Length: 189
Image 1 (spheres, helix red, strand yellow):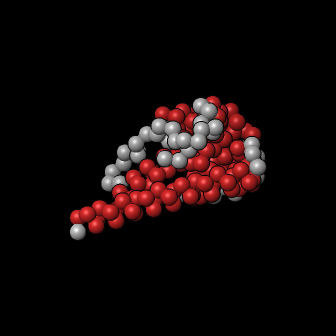
Image 2 (cartoon, rainbow, N blue to C red):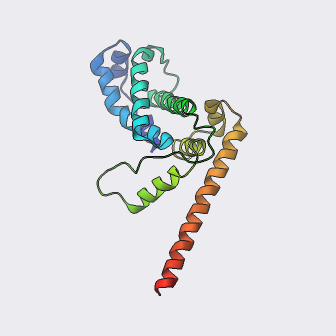
Image 3 (tube, rainbow, N blue to C red):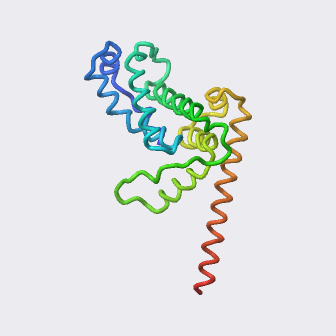
């Protein structure tokens, strides 16, 4: 999933976008807006909030693009901007302090979703916002605990602890679901 962030963008398009060429900037938006939205949605759990984050990132990107030094792939740099913006939104809403899940949108509507995708989305949305963000950034986007500590302004052990609790919560939910299914099977047998 994180691979879309590391697709190379051709240097000509990037150079044109850095000079303010709107057509080249639109090409960047076309390539990266969906991965940006997906990351923000997974972290925030609200479609409108994710859309706002993506819009804000791309508006700021237009003026900040000249500051891109090229030390890392462009997509990796942009991914960090999106993650930071989503964390800032979580701070603004005071979700990082919350130990309980916040109301989240239903699974995004797409054609022919597998039942397991919906179940995974529902399980993810049951996590507290900080736990969901750490889990998404570590397990899906590949951030290290050191990077997560820096993103959240905390220690590396903060990230490890939050991730451990999130995974334990998901395992517990999966175990409860398995027991419920077993109880149903026994009742119908």
